[in-house]
Image (cartoon, rainbow, N blue to C red; front, side):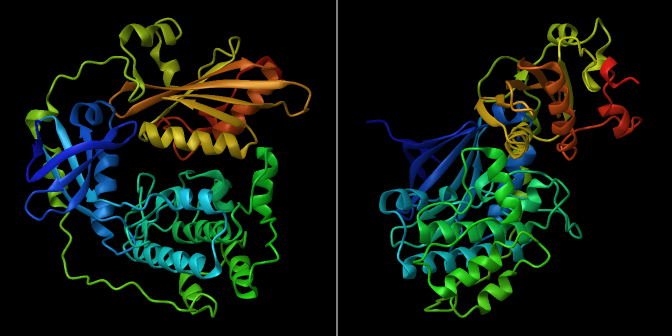
Length: 447
């Protein structure tokens, strides 16, 4: 049997696989400790402009060393791979436990909630906002303690930045102000998600759920929910203060900690903040000039958006005028429009999904293509749109939007509303105003 080693780690079976990485079981040969090894291909993350996003995720995990956060041990690199060594968690997702057992006992739900608040509060103290808290991202260790994972959509804003604008997260758990596209406080939005999680732990189902997405978002915006009869008075009162649709009056974590029900049998997490976190080695892992200068050939790869070559760009443009790619795409006869973003493709895709769902449409995603389906505004016909992300230049991604079914007027109404709600991810040329970019030139708009 051949044993593969990376540094001091013996690498075993694959235990998870995502779009950009594989996760393998590994063992530290010096200590015998089991770890999870996240393996990323250098060429892939460089080609798809994922370096900054991966750096941010690693930086965040190095900052949030806490008993209730999955621990990052170290980052290693070879010429072709990046290896992120993580704590190995054996108890699975909290989500799976809820699926298997239904609602939890009051004592168990409260213990998990206390550990969640401890971990989230620590993240906030380091300036980190998770933005995708849900039972699927909460793991359980071998003794049943909660561990927060998956910081891929987390924010680590610059000092002095208090308002976040990127719409992301999982619809049923997202705070109403995130859906409003007017900016939000990351800490306050995370608290809302914690409240939804507490409700799910105690009820066994979601507080906000509806087959009709328009109705779902309406319920979230109005905080339209009711607590089951078996909820204790203390839990019910706390949940109502957390699921306050007004972020200004929503309870803060410091007040959650003072709540009488929350404090029952509360055992605060014990940790020693004794280590200086050095983020310099993260740049060293990625910034090997010999690797960054490798010739990466464009091509069709399901791991990321298609990279458009010169021939593709000419076909997509009007004649040889490539400027139309960076405007709004005026080929309204074919009901096709485009915009450009400098955000990572994964963030663009997540933002478009949340916005489309907040508008009441169903979404279906495969790789970097999304189909949006729903009923027209007058409820008389079906309506569908295809959106696909392409890489057109380093750090530039084009979203191509085409009407797949339904009325052309409905399509233009959809695009105007959709575009306006995505302003935080859309790149605009410095010389153009936002009014110029989103103006539609169609006969129907002329008086």
